[in-house]
Image 1 (cartoon, helix red, strand yellow):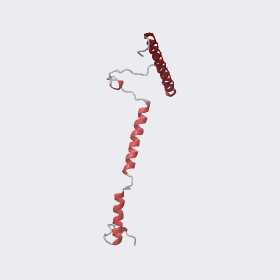
Image 2 (cartoon, helix red, strand yellow; image 1 turned 90 degrees about the vertical axis):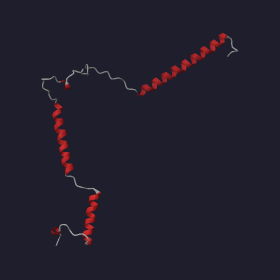
Image 3 (cartoon, helix red, strand yellow; image 1 turned 180 degrees about the horizontal axis):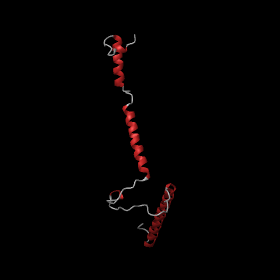
Image 4 (cartoon, one colour; image 1 turned 120 degrees about the vertical axis):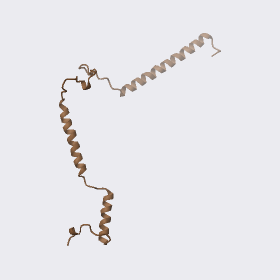
Length: 127
């Protein structure tokens, strides 16, 4: 480059800068176009403000005022507590299916058959 005249050097530098700028804008356009394919458009729904500003009161109820239940609360309380009760009863009366219980009963049965261990309930023995 040092062999070129100063005006030619400026022309080469200007053309290189223009090429870089064109490459950058083409890359940016390609990125923007490709990312738009997977982007979602912003939903513009009206209806007013959805934010309740804080009032400083616990659950928004001032002291001395009575809290009013919403419609879903009683259904939730009865459904949640009722299902907990049903599952607790089902869990309490579920059969014991552990391998340790089975192995203990099987060992006791085999020892009773061999005569090593006496039957703990001789009255239930078939005659």
